[in-house]
Image (cartoon, rainbow, N blue to C red; front, side, top):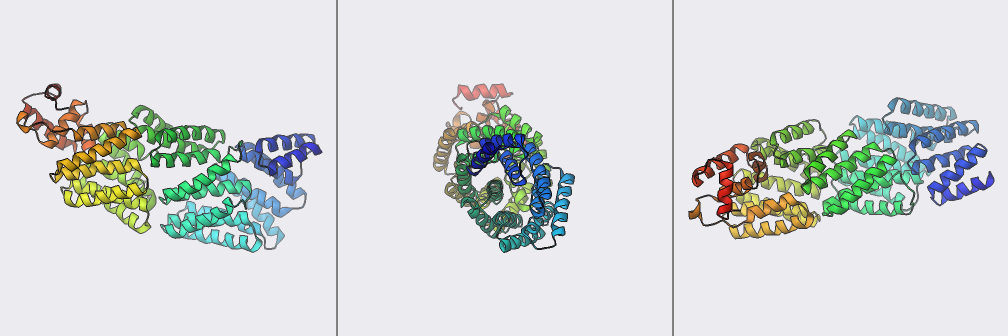
Amino acid sequence: MASFLEEGRRAFAARAWADAGAALARADSESPLSAADLEALANAYYMLGRVDDFLATLDRAHRAFVAEGEPLRAARAAFFVGVNLALRGELGPASGWWARAQRLVEREGRDCAERGYLMMPVALQHEGAGDYGAAFEAAGAAARIAERFGDRDLFALAVHTQGLARIREERLGEGLALLDEAMLAATAGELSPVITGVVYCGVIAGCEEAFEPRRAREWTDALSRWCEEQPDLVAFGGRCQVHRAEIMRHRGAWGDALREARQARERCERAMNRPAAGQALYQQGEVLRLRGEHAAAETAYLEANGYGHEPQPGLALLRLGQGAAAAAAASIRRALAERTEPLARARLLPAHAEIMLAVGDADEARRACDELEETAVRSGSPLLLAEAEGVRGTVQLAEGRPEVALQSLRRAWRSWQELEAPYAAARARVQVARACRALGDDDTAVLELDAARVEFERLGAAPDAALAAALAAPAPAPARHGLTRRELEVLRLLASGRSNRQIAAELVVSEHTVARHVQNIFGKLRVSSRAAATAFAFEHDLV
C-alpha cells in the first residue's frame, strides 16, 4: 500500500498523470485512500480526460472530507463537482452540489475562501443571462475574498471571469488587462494543474472573442509549452490545438491548420469535450472551403453542427461559392438574427455584407457595413477595423464610387498586412484591382491581380486564384467581339462552367445583372446558347 501511494504522490507532483492515476488507483484498491489522496486521484483523472472517473472520485473525496471533519475542503470539492456538471449541461445536479457546498460553508459560520468560490456560480449565472455588469461584480467579490485569504486559484478564476465580462461589454482594454493578469499567475506556475488549464483556455478564448489574434497567439504558444511538458495530458491538449489551428489558418499555414484541427477533434472526443470537438470541425471546414474542397468542407460544417457548434458564417459562404446565393442569404440572415451581442454579430457581418451584395440587396449590405464599423470603432480592435475598411470599400465599389472605395480598400490591405493575415490581404488586393479598373487604370489592376493570384496559389486558395487569373487575363482587341471588360469577365466565368449565381457571387453583383450581361454577350457574339458562347470564347482565345 505504502509503495503504491508514495509512487502515486511522486508522479502527481511530477505531473506524470498516467503514472499518478495508475499508482493511486492501485493503492486505493488495496486500502481506501484518504480524502486528500482521493482528491489527487480525481485531478489526475481530469488531466487524463477521464471526466466520469474524475466526477465519481471527487464525489468520494467530498464524502471523505466530511467524514474526516474537514467541511470546508468538502465544500470546495462539491463546488468543483458542480462546475463540471454545469459544463456538461447538467444544471439541476450542478445546482444541488453548489447548495450542498453552501450549507457546509454556512455551518462553519466564519469567513473563508470557500465563500469566494461560491460567488463564482453566481457570476456564471449572471453571465449566462447576459448581465455582464452583475457577473463582473460577483467575480470581483470573489477576487477580494481570494486576496484576503491568499488563494491564488480563486483569484485567477475570478479575475479571468471579470475579464471575459468586460470583453462582452465591449470594454476590451479593461477586459484584456484582466485576462493578462490572470495569465501571469498561470505562466508563473502559481496555480494548481486543473486551474492552470482552465485559465489558459479561458483567456485564449477571451482574446479570440475580443478579436485579438496576436495576444491569442502569444498565450497559445505558452499553453502549447505547458501541454508539451505533460506528454500524457488529454484535458487541455485538444483545446490548445483548436486555438493553434485557428491561428495557423489566420496566418496562412493551411496545411498545418488542417492537421492540427483533425488531431484536436480526436483529442477533444477522448476528453468528452463535445463543444471543443465542434470547434475543431469548424476549423477544418474553414480551411477546406478556402481550398475549394467543397464537399469535404460541407461534411465538416455539418459534423460541427452535430456537436453543437454553429457552422456560420462558413456554411453560408460555402453555399455562396457553390452558386446557391439564395440559400446563403437565408442562412446568414437567420444566424445574424439570433445574435444580440455586438461582438458576436461582428463575426457574421462581413459575410453578411458579401452575401447581400451577391443577391443584389445593396441596402442591407450597407446596413451591415455601418453596424460593423460602429462596433469596430467602439472596440478599437485592429482586426475589426480592418474588416470594416474592407467591407466599406466593397460596398462603395458596388455603389459605383471607386474613388472612395480605393482609399478604404488600400487601408484594409495595409491593415491585413500588419496583422499577418495573407489571405485577407490578397482578397483586399483583388478589390483594389477592381477599383483601379473602374477608374480606367488597367495596368495597376493587372499588377494587383497578379500579386493576389501568386499569394492565393501559395496558400492553396484554388477558387480565388482562378478568379484572380480570369480577371487579370488581357482583353483582346474590341473590334473582334465588341464586348466590354465586364462582359469579358462574365464570358470567361461562363466558359469555365459557372452558373449565373456563381458568376454573381464571384463578381459581387446581382444575379439579374449577370443575366443582362449574358444576354448582351449572346447578342454581340451572335450566338444563342451558353455552349456556343463558350465555344466562341475558346476559338478566339478569350479564355
